[in-house]
Image (tube, rainbow, N blue to C red; front, side, top):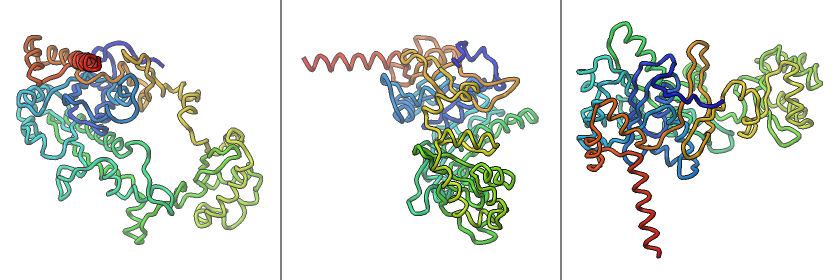
Amino acid sequence: MTADDKNKRSGAGPLRGLRVIELGSTVAGPFCARLMADFGADVIKVEQPEGDAVRSMGTRREGRSLYGTSIFRNKRIVSINMRQEEGRQLVRRLCLGADIVVENFRPGTLERWELGYDDLKKENPGLILVRISGFGQSGPYSNRSGYGVVGEAVSGLREITGDPDRPPPRVATSLTDYITGLYGAFGAMMAVVERHRTGVGQVVDAALYESSFSFMEPHVPAFQQLGKIAERAGSRLPGNTPNSIYPTLDNRFVVIAAASDPVFYRLAEVIGKPELAEEPKFRTAVARAENEDDCDRHISDWTRTKSVEQIEEELLAANVPAARIYKMDDIFDDPHFQAREMLVHAADPALGDVAVAGVVPKLSGTPGAIWRAGAQCGEDTYDVLESELHLSRQEIERLEKNATVKSHTASIGHEKEQEEKSVGASK
C-alpha cells in the first residue's frame, strides 16, 4: 500500500478537526501523538533545535533517521527553542489554540516554564493535557527520572521476562513507552468524550511504571491471596499448557497454543498420540499445567521431526493455533500483512518510498491513513508560524536569526557550510 498523498489537513478520519500539540520527545510522547495523527488529528510536533532523541536512535540512511520516518509521520514539525522566553511564548500560543497537548517532560518542567495546566486552562478551559512521565505527577517518586525500561523494572514486568536460569532480558523495542503512549492516547479520547458533555478539559496522567504494571494483572491477586511471587517462565505461559515455543527440524521455532481441552485433543491427534488426551495427567487444562514438562516433551519430540512449514500446515489444517516465530523477512513476504495493509509505503523526499507499519486498529467507517513520512526537524516551521500564529516571514527570519526557531532549510545550509569549511581545511 502507498501512503495517501493528499494533505492531511483536508483529509478524513474520526479525529479530524482536533488540534494536537506534541511537546514530548523520545518514544512515549511521540507515539501517543502519532496514534492521533494516524486517525486524522492535526498534530503539530514542537522539537528543540537539537532535534528529538528518537532521531539518534535505531538505524539511519542518507543521514536520516529511519525510526523518525515512522514515529513522526502525519505530523507538521516545527523547531522552537523552549529554553528561551520568546520561544515559550510561541509554544504557549500554539497550546492555547489546541484541543490536546501531549508532553513527557519530568514533572514540574511545564510549570517552571509557565506552561502548566493551571496556566493554560485559564484561557483554554477545554484543553486536555496528556502528561507522560516515569512515575506520575504525584507521589514520592514523581521527581525521579525514568525511561521505559526503568518503569518496566519497577513494575515487576521485567522480573517475569525471560528464562528462569538467566538474568531478565529486555524486548528489543521500547515496549513500556509504547504501552504508556497507548494509554495516554486512550485517556485523551476519554477526556474528549467527557468534554463533549461538560465543555471542560482535564489532565491525563500516564506513568510508565503504572502502564507496565497493568500488564501484571494475573499476578497481583495471586500474591495477595496466596503469597505467590511471579517468576520467569521462559517461553511458557504459567498455568496454561501447552502454550510455548517448540524447536523444528530446520532450526526454527514454532509457537503452539493448545491449552483448552478441545484444542489439545486435536493436537494429540495431529502428533500421532491421541491416547494423551485420555491420560489423567493430560486430560484437563489444570492437569496439563501441573505436568507441563511431560506435556511439552511429547510435543517437542514431534516438532523436531518436521520443518516449520510442515508443522504449520498440519496444525492449521486441524484448527490448532500455531505459527512460526516470524522474522522481518517473513513479514515482508507474508500475504496477510499485505492484504491487511500492515506494510505501508510513505514518501520521503530523500529516501523515496519508506515502508512503515500500518495503521491500527482498522475502522470500517472512518479508517486512519498515512499521508506523510516523518519530516525533518524544523521542516514546517515557516508554514506553521505563518498559518497558525500569523507571523510574517520577516518576523520568523528574525526569530531564526536569534536561534528562537529553526527551519530545516537553515539546517541544510548550515550543514553545507560546515562541509565546505571542512573541504577547505583539508586542501
